[in-house]
Length: 294
Image (cartoon, rainbow, N blue to C red; front, side, top):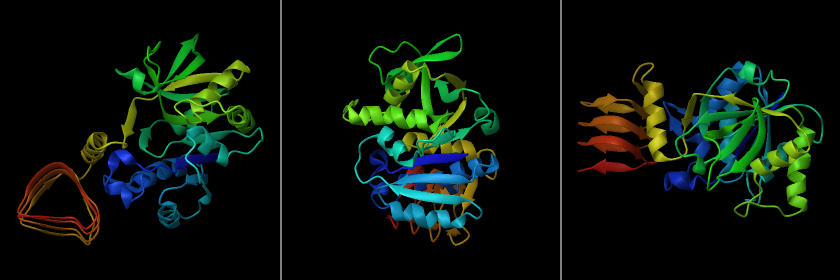
């Protein structure tokens, strides 16, 4: 089975850091988000992976060289026309299944069970603010409608960025219909609109509830995810090249060539080359080669 991971976005909510680092390569608990995702796919025996790249796409190509025995393909999205358009670039008009995983969340689920469904599966989670998400409506455990960021939500089951589709061809044609007829939502071709077309054409979807969805799309959720993962192990992830003197660290992810002296850090993520001297810092991203010193 093939997996498609769209990672073409600019990651504007994590700027300025994502001006020089692709969002999916942002380090969380010592590893890039994309590495967390790909490791889980490999564990599920999914080794044919198509990445839809765009902004800083060469960084993604270079990073994927660390993986052995994975068949990568890279397709560039040259125009930002929406998630539906990005996904279609990786699809083939064949009846084989496909797994789609967005590149800004770490999802903890039984992948084998998720992709063993006889119907297409949409990963969902109950949320308190459904108007911020794509929402699914169920009837007798079957998805009967999908709505992108509704003003008046009819459900609290939000799509969280993982989709198992039993037929690439059905999804390909659904997105093609959107593009051929210039059907957009918020000026983009949306995956949720393609799902709606598929439902109208009697394609069967079920919802698969996932409790552990570790979002990495905005600073607040990056800090929460970093802390949650590190709390399960050694409390810190520190690259062997980092220099740390007379300092106390807790829930920190420290990249290569960083220097920390006379400081106390709690839930801090440092990109390569950062320097912190004589500071007390909590819940902060220290940028590439950034220096924080009195």
